[in-house]
Length: 145
Image 1 (cartoon, rainbow, N blue to C red):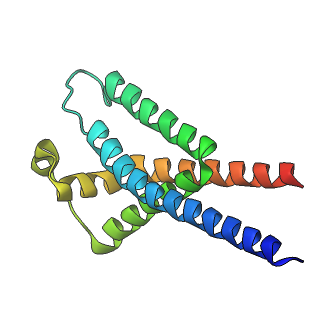
Image 2 (spheres, helix red, strand yellow):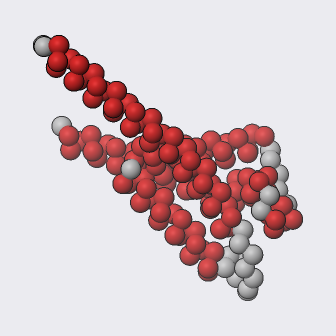
């Protein structure tokens, strides 16, 4: 192998590692944002004669659809985001972060963290993001062979 070939392969590897690192950092940001948004959406102060207001369900569906889209189109970001969401839920459960209705009403960080873990929406979101990303990564790997 010529020296220029080795240099070119090394520079491609560095560029690829840089893209993956950037995607993981973006995934962490997306995961933090997804956890917060799904928790805020689930606590929207809508009243009515419903157990869960239909508008809240619609907003949760929009967030879920966006997370599936991100996981399928950019699986590294989706995987990192899903892992971050699941890690936040695990942290909140282990640390026993509590919430009450006054915390959620003002959207304090501890209220959102606690309600998010108690509601179950973030854990479903994180599981969907991880599963969708893994499926897409496996599909891409199969098609490359």
